[in-house]
Length: 428
Image (cartoon, rainbow, N blue to C red; front, side):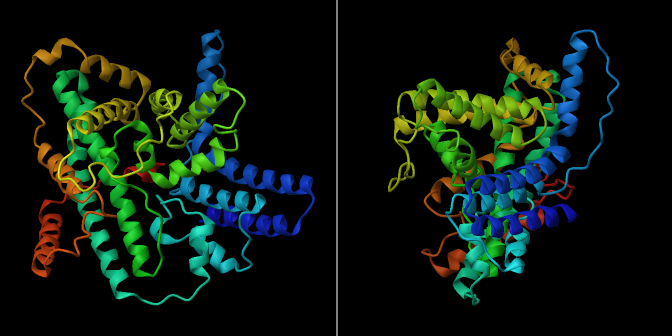
């Protein structure tokens, strides 16, 4: 609690000083103080041990064995999210895109808004803060839709994600005992698990906020139906992707550089930093870097922004080209998820080695119980891919709606995993 108060307090007062100050040098100094405070806190609690251990490993290569103690620091819940939220506020004031609020209570409420505090969506002050400064009235239609989204988010989390989590844990922990097809199945399970786990949280947060009259930004838009990796990143963890675009990629120069190499390096750096944001482990860095490599060919071909619509919009099924595009994009995403899920680089490469071994000649006979959960989420969300969430079913008859609601609720009550499976993104 003290960290969020410090971070919010610093940025609240710096925002006021930035607005009053006209001198360019002083404004830069104030911005540096905000960046140093927020990133310093984040860096200490999240990355101190990583940098110390990496430094020790490098030194040991040259025969030295330094006696440097690492601190076992508990990562404060939500620090990566609210740090970025307060930073964006300060930077936007520095850029004169917004004016600071003089209402301290509204600002602290904006930073600590409970539905999205611990795992996003990462809100911008220009969108969420004004909602605290105006009178709100309870809207029955907005509340109804919020409850539907909460219900769907709970279903994705406790029925789909939590049940798949057990299979993922077994397969990844004992990967050397399984043939390639089972490892592929385990990675498929993880892809669906992390999506349902995180988007489920986002649905619950957005739905809960709507009950109080707040509108949060959309965080997921059916990313596994993307036709290329550029579209995937416009649909996956949208609030984080756009944050890195606006506060890292564009300040580096973005695509408006005098060198194509510089442009590509900006992309690689942004993706890699995005991976590092997820955790103090080389596996996350590798995941981010790999996604950058996926993205670069589309940038070079000028095709990274070609898909901004919904796939097969107005049609029941995609055409053959769209099927191939979706499957190829999903296959690349699956491979990258191996690094995200692995405990270490050694674990990741061992898993990949076993995945592409001659064990494919063996017929998998285990861990197929999770397939129905995969099929359920993919089929339901395919038919609702043009909606904000899968339970936006206002246009069907009332009796069908209530049958659907009760079916989802019954599934939660009887199929939910009763074990303790925390949200994956709570660790970030």
